[in-house]
Image (cartoon, rainbow, N blue to C red; front, side, top):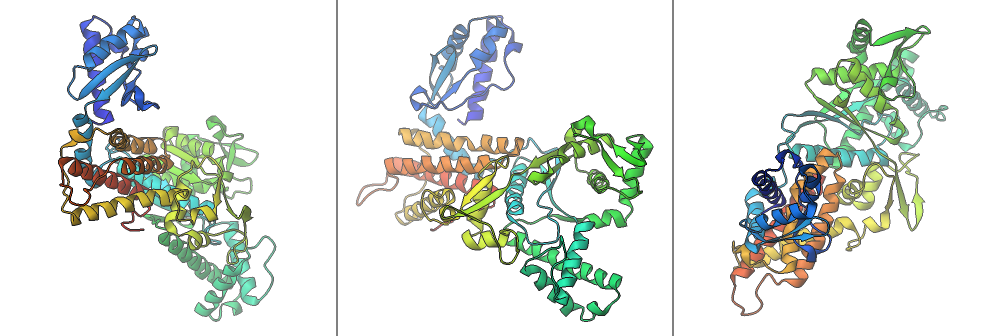
Amino acid sequence: MNPDVLADLVRDVARDVLSRRGLDVGALPEDVGVERPRNPEHGDYATNVALRTAKKAGVPPRDLAGWLAEEIATRPGVAGAEIAGPGFINLRLAADAQGALVGEILGAGDTYGTGDEYADRTVNLEFVSANPTGPLHLGHTRWAAVGDALGRVLSARGAKVTREYYFNDAGGQITRFVESLVAAARGEPTPENGYGGAYIGDIASQVVAAEPGALELPDAERDEVFRRVGVGLMFDEIKRALHAFGTDFDVWFHEKSLHDSGAVQTAVQRLKDSGNLYPADGAWWLRSTDEGDDKDRPVIKSDGNPAYIAGDLAYYLDKRARGFDLCIYMLGADHHGYIARLRAAAVAFGDPADTVEVLIGQMVNLFRDGHPVRMSKRAGTAVSMDDLVEAVGVDAARYTLIRSSVDSTLDIDLDLIGRRTNDNPVFYVQYAHARLASLIRNAAGADVTPGEEFGLLEHPREGDLIRTLGEFPEVVRAAAELREPHRVARFLESLAAAYHKFYDACRVLPMGDENVTDLHRARLSLCMAAARVLANGLGLLGVSAPERM
């Protein structure tokens, strides 16, 4: 019996009890739930349904709790139900009912933890979207890890997710990038406000090698060659780094295409025609203050040229035309103002504001020996994705970047995440899986096969491990709903802890000439279920589940 089944049982009992006593069944809350109490002595699960229902039903909470507990205790799979405090109900499950979850997990395999509540959602998930003017830095790397994990979590709960990278290949930053390449190719200093770092010289040399006469061309033609070839090389470098990091995209969208195709002009004209832009001071403005922006934003400037937000409007319209009913933008800490602007764009085109969701990620800081790690020889200004991966590996980098909420600044201790010890969270979780894999191999060598006598799993550590496994689907559901994949990582750490405690208290394989019993077989099944859930969870994070360490 998993938590969802138990919650359904409690709801059904409550509905029956209220009905039989002539009380308002409508007083019952929709989300009747059960939770694991902090103190295991209080039971396997607890529910506060009586406290939440009693006032509306017009009865004292402890009276209602008593009626419910008495009835719940008679249901199959329930070993006991007791009233606690002002009206809580503590529940204990029969070992066989609780242990049946092990068989459920093994039967579900890699689908355990999945759901279908987002089956009707088509999601455009845009993340990273770094300008093609330099290597990906730590902020981009955090989004690459978190965004990919969020896509996996949403997909696991039924959503049709398209991962999209928006290349800002139009505008002033590209002009400065080209000027920097030309200066490097000529052996001149980096222009003011230009881009430095060894990578600029590398790309400039590659442009000259590909187009030997580029520097002798007229300025406009020369710059176009350096733009076309140089930006292309930077694109390729970004794609290579992301792929090596385990993050791939379904769509690589180029901002320049919106301007070249006339999509920007079309979007602006549509908003003018609908009255959702207003003229003032020679410019055209979007009423973004209606969605909480600190001021309205110009879409067409007084000189007649489109402002940056004009491209955002066309891009949003393009996403909707491609059939996406939810557009998630994952942006850096300096983009907080985009929340209101993008929601205002949705409303201006006649969509609900919540068609757009903007997630803002905070900065990442690296430390070694207690001192900040700041510089990258190649990038010249910041630690890059490649620097981090080279230092600690893909798994450690991804897991560490995902396991904390993106709402908070993340400080990473390079010494810690490089250690192969239990104080390193990624090692702790992966070691639990490797330990399980080793046990399963040893069981096969000792002719111990998995069994289904789950009623024998009565040890407190067995029960704790089973109940922890039962939480996984709800963790994944909440991670998808709240857009917080870090919940999966934190759950895996609690699961690894529960398994290590179980392993220390409960012998799985027989010793010496000891006969194989049904308890050994049931415990092996429990271990296989734990291994499956660890692998499923790590897979949602894009982190490997090693068989050996």
